[in-house]
Length: 179
Image: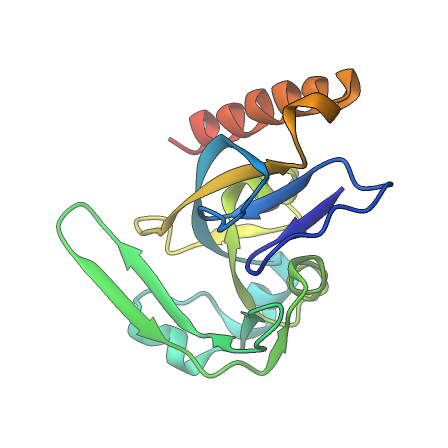
């Protein structure tokens, strides 16, 4: 399985499914929406103990932030959209560290390197077990639809169908836990 955030897709013999953030541009492929998740701010308890917890969006400017980069273009994703019940804000951060791999950003956050803007479904287990803590929980980030891209209906294996169903349930449960 591969996770992609942009570009076209070439399915090799060994690749059954691609999980994509946002609606893909995929000629000749089957696209299925899995779920919608949201982004949240999070950091490790060690980071918060050492650096304090930001209490306002403006406080983020004083903290070490961890950012993603787009996979192919390496464009920095440092505009964090956060909203509360009445207002939407765009916070620009200057990251201390950035990567085009969400797992690396997650690992940095777990090891106390800074504050990350993560997909809730990605950070769910770490938040649930206390390895990460929600920062500014009165704000939620952008909603992000997740899609599965498949090579064709003729080649969907039973294991891939089962994976998709389990993934839908898992993400639905994480979003319900969030609310």
